[in-house]
Length: 306
Image 1 (tube, rainbow, N blue to C red):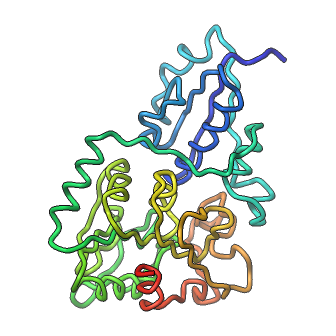
Image 2: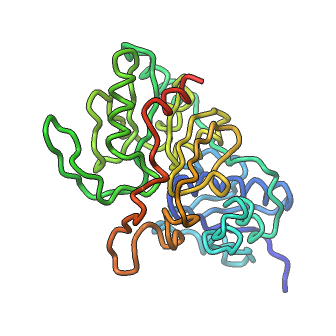
């Protein structure tokens, strides 16, 4: 086999998974010095300004990839899917750890990397400084969900379709109700997700959302993009875990809250490498009443204040 002249990593999946992939690229760069590294990414904004890259290409925008990377050269393409690694499926090793193994390098035990510009950071700081009360940055819902029904006073009536790591809606609203008298709660959400009463909705670019982590003094997240981004930026957060586990997705920098209430390990995301849908296309419904998400508002507040 001819020696490669460069490396190409394919980073698919959500924004948080792309943040984790930046750790794989760091290990590739440090353990294969001299080999240019290119990334084809589902979320290229995560990779902007990353000094370890020789080239960045977005899914569906790879017109120049063959001319710039393949033609006349020999790139080693790493398109492994870490979600299908046996040790990951059984919760025995971290996502980054198995991904590094698939890439042929050793994980340095550090989280991913994000490189924010001074303008991005300043924009977030100005926004936080303009709030009337001390800020708590909250990401209560993860993934993508269909529009939800709303009931009396705008309260969400049900939570069908929410990401399995998400806060139960009553808990999320209870947290905001408890914090709102003394804090401004910035709720990071997707446009289709519900706005909690009393929270300030934030639906901005991924890089500005990451900058808000740096600008906000307190942070309360579920297992989604912001907890990966916070670790990449060296900013601790309180992270509530339900259907996913910090042993495979989390970081020791954070205060990770877990409950051992579920009789089946990993049941919150069955066949999670196929995302959160059943093979029929229907939403998966927990047969154990979401026991792993049975936190209380007081538990969340105590963790946030601790």
